[in-house]
Image 1 (tube, rainbow, N blue to C red):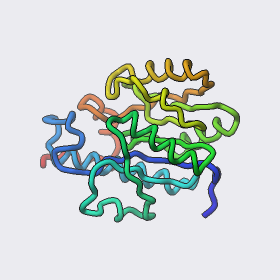
Image 2: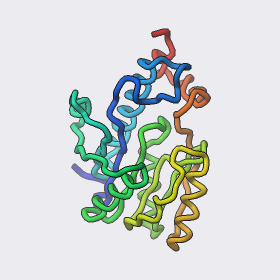
Image 3: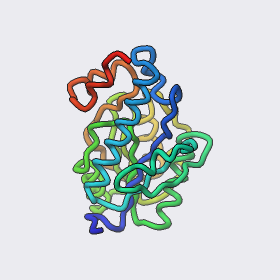
Length: 213
């Protein structure tokens, strides 16, 4: 397969879907089943959009046990790897450390932003190619939906209050301390809490999630 950035890698972080264990902050606004459906829809849509963009080789890094082989039903069949680490920062650094032994640059995205397109990921890869050390895609809630690096630096991911409103602010501080030059893309919304649902209710592919279950 031909890629626009064959020496780069695109990683999607994905949590194995389990009833009652995903999108728990949506409850009781959404039922457990609706929360699970929302999680699966965003995860699958993200994979489909980015894998078909053919920007770079892509891998799914999974947390949790996939006893049902859920991810092996994806098309195209994903390259699966297991996240390792005691917190999100360790897991992200581990993914970068492993992947940058094999590729010149790596873009890591989550599965919670339905507005993250191939064009936006392509921008991140292009800025790395132009000489930036890092590219960050901010989230409107104070976190980020994308981070791209050419070096595996653990300090970028240490001491971060993951899941809180200061993630981006703390990450900027770590990037300055590492003396990296970075570029920030336009902010996009993550869909994590009930108030975030206003971003996706206009999107027809999510209509059935808001019907009574």
